Image 1 (cartoon, rainbow, N blue to C red):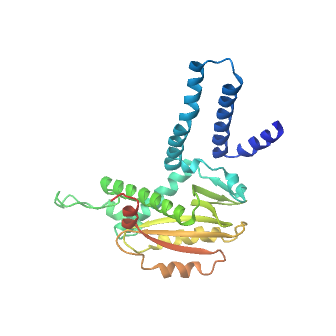
Image 2 (image 1 turned 30 degrees about the vertical axis):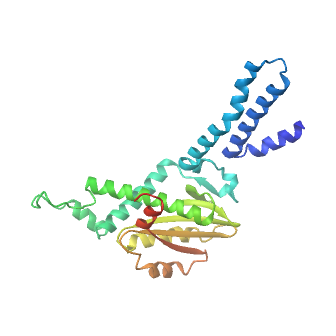
Image 3 (image 1 turned 90 degrees about the vertical axis):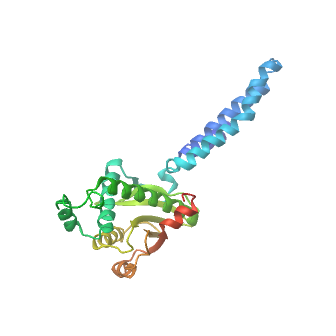
Length: 278
């Protein structure tokens, strides 16, 4: 009996979900043991234990809902994925740099300018423009904050949608680690014996700039020789004003790679309606 319990406990302790299950099992086991073995307890002494056994599941349900809704990415260990040694969690510093670059891409696309042109706009004298007119330059604080909010919301909604489509939790902000490079990815999951990597791009104008095209190609090319069975890269494009028009350009750039790449498009406004945000 004890060896079987120890083997089961060892298996459960491999990830946070298992540890939670083990913790609940131990509490229930101890409570039941106290209730059955301690025959000397009177009714008043047994009532608190009975109430605990009855009410404990409701507290567990509430706590589990909170974990699943707001902290679901922390419930799975790397061992839940095949070839887990090659996938690592991106540090907050690396993640922040990646996010900053992508937000800059969105800002520049929203203004319809390149990075070099953006620098010129920042240095432009706007003192002659009436105060009633809002100038959406990449350096405009309110404009930048709005872009950041939209970016993070779009990414979160697409992750939710993808988890529904593939019926599998996605570990966010991961990276593939090989001997000489680190490929940053927005997410990784396992679905139907496939290892799926996700890269999400938020696009307001419905047109991928040269910088974004190169960025997506570099990610795909760095994964081209990945040593993982049944691996696929999913590129999720989130548009706001209109669908991405030059998607064929992206497909053509990726056509010379061996890695399977699937491109999906999502309407940002539709996602907000579906998840009750409008």
